[in-house]
Image (cartoon, rainbow, N blue to C red; front, side, top):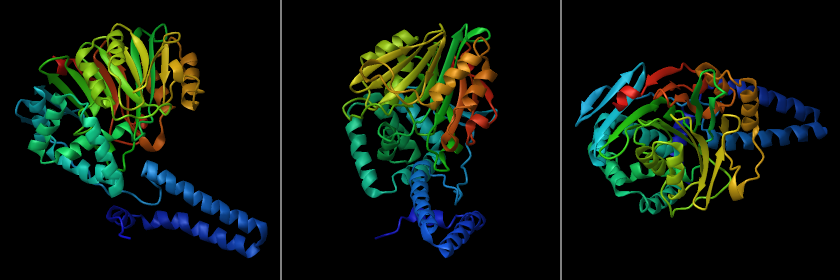
Length: 421
C-alpha cells in the first residue's frame, strides 16, 4: 500500500517536545499499571485504546490534532488592480471589489488572487480530498450539481480559471463540496427592537468550519457589483463564489448553517450559489423567503436572515423540506438542526439553550459588544474561522478574521456602504 505523501509530510512536522510531553507519561503509566497487573491493567489498556481511536477520529474531522503543527506559511494578499477590479487591504482585512459581468469578475479575481488560489487548492482542497476515491466521488457529485448552476456563475469560474491557471474542475469542486461535507458547524443570534439597546437589528455570527491549519489565513471580503442585481459583500475565501455569509446594498444580511436533520441531493442548485442569487435579487427577508420557497437547494441548511427594516427569520431548507422560524420576543437563534415544519421535533442543543439564556439575561441591552460576548460563549474552539456582528441598517459589520478561535480575536469595523456605492 502506498503511503499518503501529505501524511508523511505532516509526520515530519510534529514537534518532538509536544510528542514527548504526551507520549512519555502514557508509557510510564502503562508500564506501572501492567506491573501491578490484574483488572486495573486491563481497564487502563482498554481506555488507552479507546482514547487513541477517539483522537484519530477527532483529528480526521478537526485536522488540528495536538501532536503536530502544520507549518503552513501564509501567502500574503497584495493590493492591486486588474481589468476593472481591485484588491485593497483595509485595517488588515483584504477586500476584493469586482465589477462587470460574471466572466469579467471571475477574470479579475483570478488575476488578483492567483497565488492564494493555487495555495488553497494545493494545501487545503488536496488535503480534504487526499484519498483518491473520495475525490473521485466528490468530482462526480460536483458535475451532477454543475447542471443546476446558472450559466453565468459557471462563466465566472471559467474566467477565474483562465487568468489564475487553476483548473476549472478544481474550482468547481471547491464551490460544491460543502453541500455534502457537513462541517459548517455554525451559530447565529439575531436581535432587534426591545431586545437591543437602541432598537437596531443585528446578527451575531460564528463561522465554524474546518481549516486544516490553512484556510483561516485566507479570510477576506469580496464585494460584487454585478451587471444586473444588487451589489453585495460576501465574507469568504479566495475562489469561493457563493455566499456563506453576506450583506447586500439593500440591507439584507444572511448566514448559512448546516443542518443534520435532512439529506443531500444532486438534483438542485448548490446552496451557496442559491444564497448568492438571493442577495443579488432580494431586498427584504420576505422577498428572500419567497425566493427560497421557489428554489430548492441541494444540501440541508439553515439560513439566518435579517434586514434593514428589522425583518428577521430562519429558513430551514433541503431539497425536500421548507419551513421558517420567526423571532421570539425580538430574538432568534440558530445552530445545526431543523425545528419547524414536518422535520420539527429535535431537542435544542447546548448552544441553542445557552443563547436562549443569554438573550434572557441581556434583553434590552444588546449592542455590538454584548453580541460579540454572546458569540464568544458559543463558538467551537478548533474550527472557529470567523466571528462577526452584522448591522444591516448601517450596512456595516464588526469582524474578527485570521486566528482560531476568531471569537477571541480583535473585531474590526468595516463600513460596507462605501464599497456598495
